[in-house]
Length: 135
Image 1: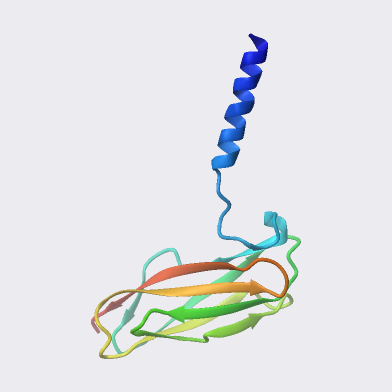
Image 2: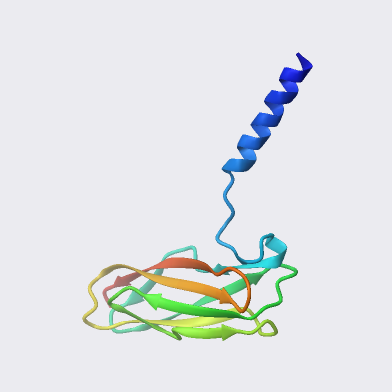
């Protein structure tokens, strides 16, 4: 009976640990040796014909001391700058993105995609939504 209980507990633990998925993290295997891209979690709005500044950042693990190249792309209809930036290990991890919508941009929801690639290790990505509204 004890053997059956121990087997069931071991099996349950294996199933639970196998079902957990790591967050979108790049760099190293552990969270201390990796990084992730932090993007706005609440809706970002841009008025037609205007510019909006949005902050994104690199959240580094305690042992992640590498440079990260960020590539930024927007869905058609939005402009974003910069589109490519190197965040040095010694720099502050914050990046200011300038998002623009022309006067002709259709109202609706768009996306900004970011890919972070360290000089060594695995890349990671993140995205966030931008809503274009009337002026």
